Image: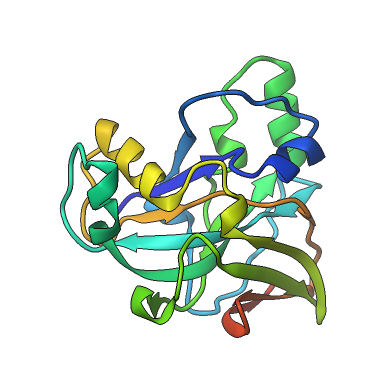
Length: 204
């Protein structure tokens, strides 16, 4: 099982991070399977970071084998969706960027890819007009709508399949909107697609 993630896929988030971004292709990175956090298990704050940020994202699950997938057929390659958190060690990421070094360890460490309960895509009216949000301790801290994506879900699937063979069970984190922020011990995170709570866990 592979975990793919898309960076810089919402203009508002790019502005939030003070990044100028012009490209005809998605920004792609990967996480190992050891990054997966599921079933409501707690997220344990690691010792190597003092600034751990949440990034709320729509996550899709691949349901068939695919390579060099045409964009018009990409919708056939997933049938489940959820909300997830791409945890980022922001202080570590910044330090690595300043030195011009790869920043994978700030994004791909153990348990850095939290996912909620998957629901069938058939229960979603329109994948590119989908509201989602994250509550921490009962307060909404981040929200977005997939219509604001720079690259659509179908475009992302098609692009990834140029370089990697997609297999059943692979996950794709599709990017985060604006509103990222820190987490602390005892925080209670709950993620929603529309009014459906799919993600629920605590920080320890």
